[in-house]
Length: 187
Ligand code: NI
View 1 (cartoon, protein in one colour):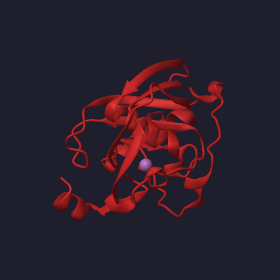
View 2 (cartoon, rainbow, N blue to C red; view 1 turned 60 degrees about the vertical axis):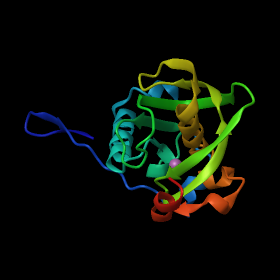
View 3 (cartoon, protein in one colour; view 1 turned 30 degrees about the horizontal axis):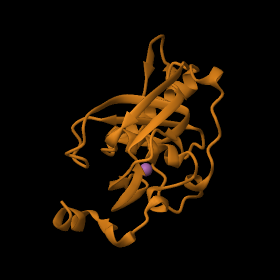
């Protein structure tokens, strides 16, 4: 939020509350964002607060429904992250109204967690390579290909925009693990 005080402009960063599994907002199909609204201060504030909330919780991605906003927007960023110590770095990416298609037929199985599914990890099959079309934070259309962990995070976040969580994509629940047991037996 940008507020005007005594002649001085200042901005505040909000750490938003994360919706947890069971909250209906996580199961809604999020609405597309009007591209003309992307550059408005209100929407830019939402994006910035989503990014700060993701960083606060050591997430590698966050989708707007996870902060109780049912709009098609997501942020992805991987820096040094205690929740994903082996993950390759990914610079900050904002995806608005993303369309994701598999690029090739290969899938890979790897671990995922979710800020909305606190304390659990499970192995999830995902397309190895994807093609993405979206708007960026400036409201410009972008398209790119992604592979590996980046492709996985994109699929995870874009699933949130369709009302899905990683548990819905698991084909074998025998790997579902609490974090402590995950660290003890699976790493
Ligand atoms: Ni998630």
